[in-house]
Length: 278
Image 1 (cartoon, rainbow, N blue to C red):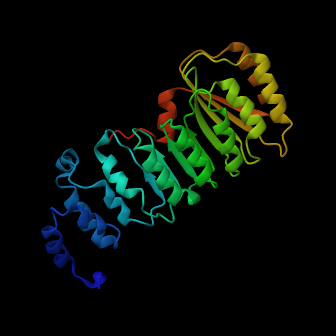
Image 2: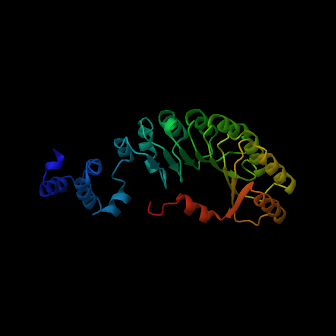
Image 3: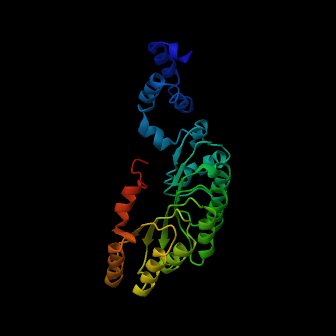
């Protein structure tokens, strides 16, 4: 029936709904005509809409077929809405990113319990032990993960590797307050699944890896079956040890590793984790 309504009738109806943001958003997915009229009305007062927080974030629950969510909370104003959203089943969801402030870990854990099985990618800046364990429990089909481990949480990283056997790429914070590079290298070479081939490390301090540690890592990686080229990406602003660079270049030439150093901003741009429009 919706497809047979003339455009002028829809214009009148949607004008009447101008203040009903939730209903207008539900019209976006009906068809091209409905979407075009809805967008035109929604964009009239876009700045007032954002500053007044008129639309509850929970309206996302209406779109159960979404495949990608990016929850960019610049403050805590939407956290209570996520409390309701945690129970919604998104049967086709494959990508979940929470690049800024994270809702309460209990909310995210419940969300993962319901939706984690289909997730392929999950990124969060939250460093919560119970949340990290829930990733291992509820997200067995992940191929890509960005996560923060606090100091002393080596066993959690091992558990994630053991439970997420399709994991190909992981990005981790390293430094004094977190797992060190040396610890991560040791766990990756001994516990990562056969599918694993990319390690990204944010480095918040001076590296604790000595050339002998790095060489040992590459020797052991070379012995893995099946053999896979390792993409090693270090994200930092500090000077990188020249001796370590020489070791890396040696194993690049041997076809064991492909190495890259990135700055923080460059990596954020590549991953699209900073959204200036929010």
